[in-house]
Image 1 (cartoon, rainbow, N blue to C red):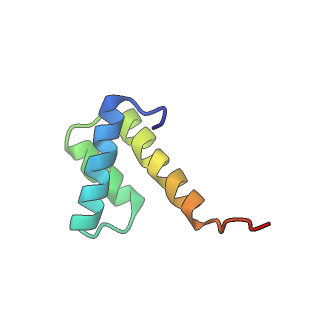
Image 2: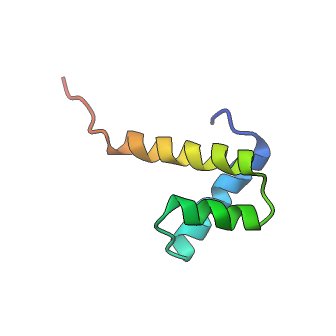
Image 3: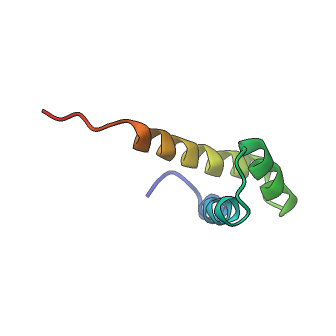
Length: 65
């Protein structure tokens, strides 16, 4: 799927669930909550960064030829 490690992918899953369930709207809040769960800062940064890139790509309309 990506260049994420297994731990980072687990963090990504946790981040998506946490953001949706708790309606977290700010990345800084999400990152700090994930770090308080015991995840390493570098892994949190990688997982959240992957999600941000994914969401940015979804926002770009497809080019129709």
